[in-house]
Image 1 (cartoon, rainbow, N blue to C red):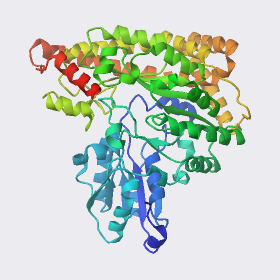
Image 2: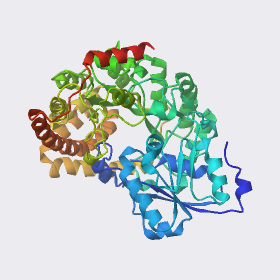
Image 3: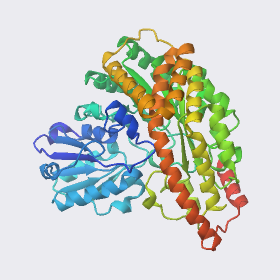
Image 4: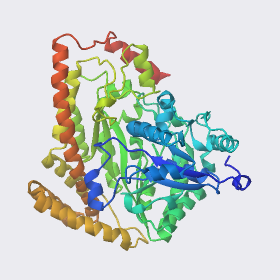
Length: 553
């Protein structure tokens, strides 16, 4: 239930919302892409601007996104309270923000996913507000207005009614700072992947907004003047297939009425490929990209990690089915599962090549706080602290547990995958294959929107200069891809340019990770040679059997 704002009107408050910095460089920081588009960072803090809309109307709210702008002492001094919080890769900066705010004598409130998962990390904050805001904002506001200046507030898990979630405060954003803007239709995921913290934070029964509610959000974004890329930030948009199928026809009609001002991306499970009707609706709504967690091409590993939705299928056929709907696939892959054998890198490289996925987020397995994986590893006596000294990005950290095969072998496999996947010739060849397979169509009622088009034309000019003059090593690959796709599938060119811009970041980032891996391999081999590396006492068969029992249950 939302706060009765009329009752709270006589008690104004000045609130500074601070979105902490992400650790950089990281896979998703996309610095080069941001430079191309003239943005400061990838996306705005949807959680904070939604929280802002839940607060009393009489309260004055300012937003500082530390990924896009500086937080000054004057900002802090202006506020009665400072609200902050984010995800694990923002932990260090969130703690710095807490220290700065308290040093200025102001009250600081912490929330967000990392505080939910690891509340003990943030004990120094004046208030800890843990859980979905719709389920506890009334209690916090009433406590503040009663004069309380410290406290702990926890929401009942998975109970927040997202149909009471307000329209986010898009007016707090400077759209020029961002590559794209996010909206959310649902929370939760029906699957039981052992390593995933989404089901721990938001539950296994996806809760969805109403169709009218979602369209009002899009209306607000449209009326704020935004046009272009919108990301549905749902962790699995198709977690509730019935609900999304009922919503998409309304989204299609909304888009058509306005000439398709938005093009969409999202995240979904691979079983999206099993539903022709759903793919057709997403195509008509103008979805152009989807992130899918593939994790591993090995069936035993998928069963072990309880990702059974990825088994009993051809990954290549599934991914190409999505391409045929005009939607390209970005995917996540993980190295370090207990069931892996030496040289699993060859199978992963083969999978990425067979599916032609250009943007493959390959990372080390991380036992995140409060997950099935971390609980199992702790029970087995194998859990180690998160190696945050190596950065909070799973590409550069991870393996915070005693591995069943030599850790140096895992690191070598990871290095081999990155060296192959982000080799420029191999990457651009995958982009070309996707460009030729992507079945894009000009949709009925679709119009040219000049604001994003002008921006994209500037990017095209900068990209041509970058890949022709500044990066002559990419010249042949770049123009070869444009010519090949332009001749046979010109409507896909826009999205191939998007992928090639991403390479400017990913190529550099992969080299950064490979250099780190080289150092880690040398250090780890020395530990293993000297008998100083920890050794797991649990045999692989025991761990695998336990996971299979979990699947059966």
